[in-house]
Structures are given as C-alpha cells and as structure tokens.
Length: 264
Image (cartoon, rainbow, N blue to C red):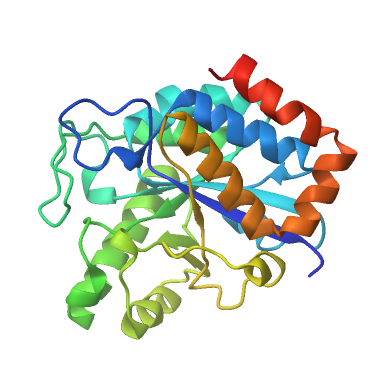
C-alpha cells in the first residue's frame, strides 16, 4: 500500500453551551473548515474509512464522527460538501433518532439530540459511510463476552434493517476494548475499528492492526485550538512531508495570514 492515511476523530460540530463539561467534544464550524482547507492544500483527498483502507495510493484523509449527533447532519454536512468531502459516522443504534440523550457511563451530562434514520439514509446517499458504535454507549472492556456480542449484533442488525447496508467499520465507545471485543467484531464482519489513540508518524504510512486504527483528535473553537489541530496534523503526517507540501502549495507564507483574516 503506497497510500498515506490520516484519520481524524471528531464528535459534535458547533459551540459548547456554558453547561458543557467536556468542551473539547465540540468543534467549531470555523475550525472544521480550517482543518479541511489545510488538508486539501496539503494534497489530501477525503474518503470514508472503508474506501480509504482499500485505496492503493495517494494522500487520504478520513473524517470520523463518533456517537451520531444531529449536528453532524445539520452543521458538518454543509461544510464537508464545500470541500467535496465525505465522512464516516459511527452511530449508537439504540439512540438513533432520540432527543436529549445522556449516557450513564459518560462524564458529559449535556443532553444531546441524535441523527435519525432518515438523516443517515441521506448521508449514505451523499457518499458517507455509516459505521457502528455499538447498540449502547458503554465501556466494552467491562462487559462480558455475551454482552459484547449482543451490543455488536444488535447494532449491525439495526443498521442493515434500516439502511440496507452491513457496516464493516466500528468505533470503540470511550476508546475502551479488549481482545474479546475484537474477536466479536471479526465474527460479525467488522473489518476496521478506530481507537482514541493518537497516531505516530509510521501509523499514517502503515496502519498496522486494522482493528486498532489511531486517530488525530480535533476539537475546540479558540486560536490555540487551531494551532493544536495544525500541530497534531503535521506531527502525524510527518514534519518533513508537511513542510515540503506546504512549501509547494505556498502555505508557509499564507497560513498565518489566512488564519488571521479568514477564521478570526
């Protein structure tokens, strides 16, 4: 495989309300726009996870959204369409279409509205991939093999029944899993799974274990969040490679100016 694959991990798109505990779960529309602009200038094309993992060449960026928030449809989709980009959204099938959702095992207690099946059908028609995040938002590594099997089975069946497609990609809730989790995923035809771990330079060139794919986490809204997103991106793809790409695209000169003029 000669392709370079950078996987980004996101959750909500918008601005956190004052009551939000984990404000980094929100990515502002401007920060998302900046990240897409930066990657496109660095020569990356945007593919879904399943398409990226079967690509044989090129620089590929994969946008992944965990949980299945409604704002992924209302706020993220229009931004991605401006860049001709698609994404993979990992949904908790037991919460699809629900309003004011709060998960018992999550540190964040902010109620959230989730995408419904009609929205997911539209996203799929627009080229997005619908992946599984389990049937409930729980720590898989604390569950018995029987419970893990049920959570994965229900999720796969729900997606197939409602969308007509069988998911082959998975995101571990909270990033927690064990070898039994991976065994269950294989049993149900899941080929790719993403973690919450940050990628190292060689992970972009050679992903390694396809059920332990690493991601660059993107979130925030303030100036230092833009800097952090750029640094994490450049670190993952390699400083030398990034500098050469930025120089050829004249980004070294225009990034500071664009950041100041366009996003602030």
